[in-house]
Each structure stands twice: as C-alpha cells, then as structure tokens.
Length: 406
Image 1 (cartoon, rainbow, N blue to C red):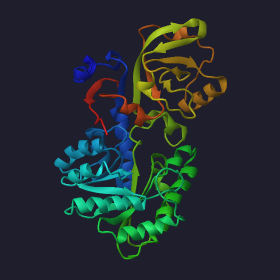
Image 2 (image 1 turned 120 degrees about the vertical axis):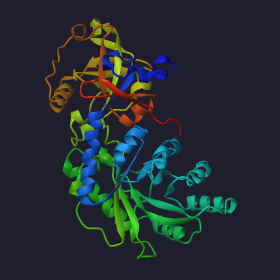
Image 3 (image 1 turned 180 degrees about the vertical axis):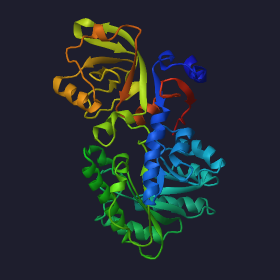
C-alpha cells in the first residue's frame, strides 16, 4: 500500500488541491442533504426504509442512511455485512438482507452472521430451496431462513415475472419447507435508470407495487403479515408520487442505494441536479497535446470505471464541463472536448456556458489538478481504498475507509 493510503488521515485540514492523486473526494454537505431528503420522504409516507450499502460501503454513510430510525439494510457482499457489524454492536442495526440469490459458498458464512443479526435471504428458484434443505441436514440446528422472493418487474436480472408458472410453485415450495419461510416479496427496478421524467419514474414505481402485490396473491396463508419491498434510486426520488393503498397484511418498505452520492447517470434521469453529486475524482494533468487539443491525466479505468450514460465520456471536469475523459487506458485518461450537440446538452444541464473552440493549452497545464464528476458512483468508489471527506470549502475534514472484499 502506498504512502498516501497508509497516511490518509494526515491530509485532514488540508485543501483538496494538496491531496495525492487519483483521490476520491466526498462532499459531506451533499451526502447529508441527499440522505435527509429521502428520510423525510419515507417518514412523511409512514413506510419502512432499507438502504442498500453497496455504493460507499462504509460505517459513516450507512449510519447516515439509517438516520437513527431504520434498522435494516441490503448488502450485496458478505464483506458489507461484516463491516456493518459495528452498527450492530452500537445498537443501530438489527437485520440485513443478503441481496443476491443465495449460493452454496455463502451459506456457512451467513449462518455465522446470524449469531449477530437477523439475516434474510433472496430466493427466486426452487433449486435454492433444495440447497437450504440440504444444508439443514448438515446443520440441523439452523432455524428456517426468512426469505424475500425476488420479483422481476422489467429489469430482466434476478427474479421471476408475476405470470411465470414457476412463481406459485416456488411460493408453495417455500411454505412447505422446513428450511425457509416467506418474509416478503422484493423487486428492484433497475430499468428505471432509463427514465427521464418524474412521470416516467413514478410509472415504474407503480409497476413495482403492482408486481409485488400480484405475487403475494399466490400465498396459501392469506392472513400472515408480509413485507413488500420496492425501489431503486430513480424511483426513490419520486416516492412521494406513490399511489394506491396496499392490501391489509402488507408492510411496504423502500430500498435504494446510490442516492446519497448520485452521479452522472442519475443526473441524466433529470430527477436530481448536478449539485446533488457527492463524489468527485481528483486527478493530475500529466501532459498537454496542443496539436490534438487533448490532455493526459493520471486517472484511467481503475480510478474511474468504464461506465457511460447520456453524458459522453467516462467523467466530466467539474468546473469545465465542456471537457470530459474521452478515452482511457488502465492508469490514465485523455481529456478532450465534446461535439457541438453534446456540449450544448451538457451546458444546459450543468447550467454553465461552454466554449466549443476552447484550446487545451489555455485550459490546462502540466501540474494542474482537475476534479471529475463520474458516471457510476458505485463502481468508481469500489476502486478506492480511502475517501477524503470535505466541507463546503473543499477542505478535508475526515477520511473514511470502505469495506473491501466479497
């Protein structure tokens, strides 16, 4: 591990311009603003909230997301669950949904974790019930696992569509199994990232509700209380548009993960503003090429991630959004100007004027530092071993260390 990572806390009190690069910079005021909005929305609606910890994967942000009110999370990795145990010890967290369909390699570790907090599994196949029952024969003291049944409402990732003949069979199999019990129904509208208006996102949110309610009709025991969990960051932004009343016996909860940070993908939905982006990557300008009007920075694929959106490139210079990372190699990126049509769109969204004839030699010089807005905060954050947390003046006030591994 290099010096900057071993000594990240030594930069507390310094301006961003003095950080080693590439560095992940987090705006604490923006994080607090974004998390407060969603906590207020779910409180007003009187529903439960289950934050997904997959984006920043750290104790400080997880605590912020829970807001001293909510006591359950979603985690995509065992490392995230282990990391969150600090919040269990402090009495702030009670349960965790392991957000992938359960696998054989994860089960022994999940069983160990049940000694510390309630673990809920994700199920979308009868073969997973076979797995749980087989595991029960080897560990007969294991209690029946509470499970969310995953419903596919259009994202075509995990889950079963509501008209699949496999869905009622799976529900009935779980209800008759000694190894599992139905906790509720869960869906994630990943396709909501394609929404570009509040109306479109609200329509996806409504389809989520309808999907989990429809799935619940296959339960044999109609009187038991279940949880229906819906959400994604785009639909969470419009949760106040929720319509209709759930049937009796159902508790509604919202889940979302990216919303504390947001990113260019979220800005592209028009549901958040550019100022609601909490993550930036700091990089050094290492070379300038006037003949091709480009510059080289020391942030490439392993600092930024190779994600895209309607915003072109792999990152946008925060104070000069006409310039973006147009190409990348592993450790370096190339800054260039966008086409006229793209420039106009970016300028409109960012609320700035962009000079399409700007020259690189008048914009950047070797030794400059640039701050980049990034395309996908979840993947970019996974590349960095320390976060530099700044105030409104971009002075480092804290450093946070994320949970790493699987």
